[in-house]
Amino acid sequence: MNDLEELVQAAVADFAAAGTPAQLEDAKARYTGKSGRVTELLKGMAALSAEEKKTRGAAINETKRYIESALTERRQALAEAQLEAQLRAEALDVTLPGRQAGQGGLHPVSRTLERIEQIFGSMGFDVADGPEIETDWYSFTALNNPENHPARSMQDTFYVDMQDEAGRPLCLRPHTSPMQVRYARQHAATHAATDPLPEIRVIAPGRTYRVDSDATHSPMFHQCEGLWIGENVSFKDLKAVFSDFFRTFFETDDLQLRFRPSFFPFTEPSAEVDIAFAQGPLKGRWLEVAGSGQVHPNVVRNFGLDPERYIGFAFGMGPDRLTMLRYGVNDLRLFFDGDLRFLSQFQ
Ligand code: PHE
Image (cartoon, rainbow, N blue to C red; front, side, top):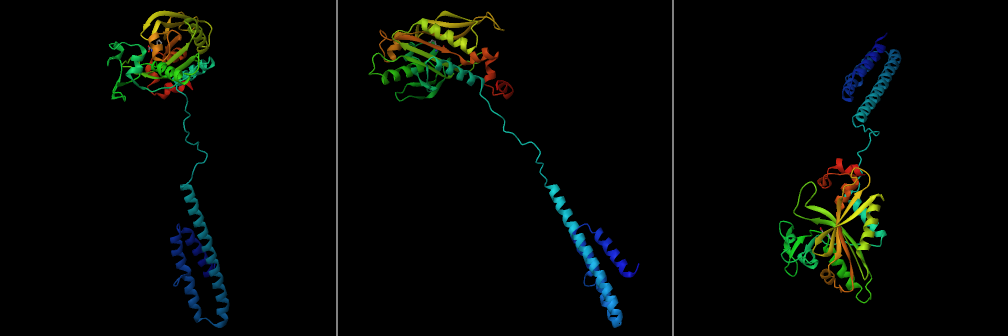
């Protein structure tokens, strides 16, 4: 091996040993830099004869080209390695499954409310909505509650620190019955020119509030009011409506209904409605599902109607209770805790 071949080998080894572009530039300077080994060789040619210069010069130039091409090669290799390292460091795993937005669903009580609306809708009932902050007059007075009725007490009803325009107290409605009066008065006013008045047939589902809290009572709960008023509406119709409703709701004809005499200031006579299943885990047990009755003449008068002419019935059901029965839930509070482990079972 002559000195030039040795030089090429040394340069190639030096370049290979350079691990970074900066080290490579240092190595390059040792060969083709101002005082590099190749440069020194070229300088040393001054002492040679013209003939020697020719052959030696050509050989050194060839050596220089070798070294330069080895340098270029190494530069590219380093640049590629650097790019690869960068790509590896910034790598995205595009096969990783994305973070999914959880799929929502309807609350079980909302499902019940939709079901109630759909079934009563199919029987020709309108669906009405009303305020949850309600006046004392709509909540009690208009519904024939005497001034000193215990339901008005602060032990039972949540009063709010506000009054209506007439300075009367406001409360969170303790039942949906105020909607009977609101809807009927509106209906009577709208159809004042029509005789006889078109029948009132409405349900009013919504949130209600009472000072009460245990496994079967929540301070916020749901009710669904119903009202059917006309010239010729009787308890018989109430029974037919309820029978149809509960059989459709629970998807069984094997269901008995019982009207148990009761008392509400706004109905006379009044009845609690119980149902009993002929099959299933609750078989044979009477379960209270609604309050009902023939609307009291004083209330019909507060509707703005003549109680000698218009008559009918009202009822109030508990959608939370119906949901518990339908799905076999034994603690009402589960509905309002917001625990997704419970709620997601109904999707
Ligand atoms: N408002 C009554 C309650 O909350 C239920 C009811 C409604 C009873 C309509 C009779 C008629 O208990």
